[in-house]
Length: 204
Image (tube, rainbow, N blue to C red; front, side, top):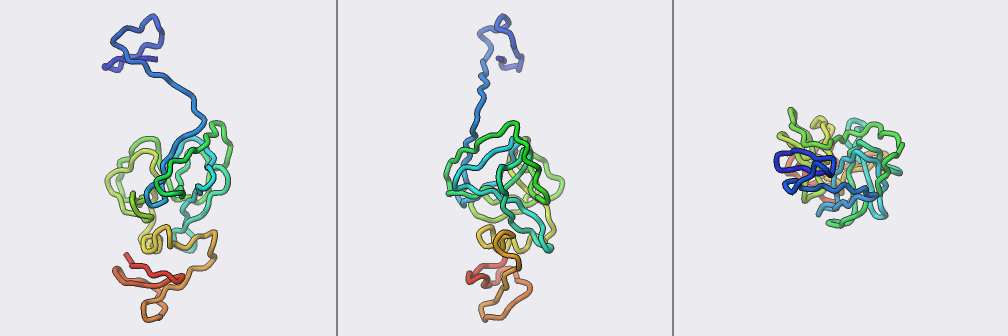
C-alpha cells in the first residue's frame, strides 16, 4: 500500500508513481511497553496479551464502598484497561495473543480506547511521575486507562497512593489509621499526617 501527501492511496503497483510514499505492514508477536518512572503505568489494549516475568497487572474495583486494587490472573483480555507494575523506566515485551479468548474482567472500573477521548465529566487517571491519581477534565490520550468514582469511593486511594492502598488480594479488612498521638481516626483531614500499617502518609 502507498499514499501521497494528499492521502490518495495506490493498492496496485501499476498505479504507483514517485509522488507516493510506501507504507510497509509487518505482523508482530510482541509489543514493547515502557513502565513509568513511578513503577506503574496504565494501558488499554485492543488485543489480548501475556505479561512477562516481573510485571503485574491490576484492575480497580469498588469493595465495601472504596476503590481498591485487585490483581489480574493470567492473560489480560482484549479491550481491557489495567494498571501495570514493574521496574521503573524498564521497557518490557508484552506477548500478543491475537485470537485470545480470555473472558472480560468483571467489576473493573478502568476503561480506555484506541483514540483520544474528549471528556464531558472529570475522571481519575494515573500520574506520570508518582504512584497516585489525578483528576482530569479535558481529554484522555489513546491507550491510557482512566476511571470514574465518587469522592468517598476514591478518597483512600488518593490519600495513600498505589504503594500504600489496601489491596484486595492481601487484606480483607481496612487497616486502621491513627494520628501522630496514637489515636485511631475514622476520617482524615487534608494536609494532616497519619500512620497506617506502620507507615506515615499525608492526607490529600
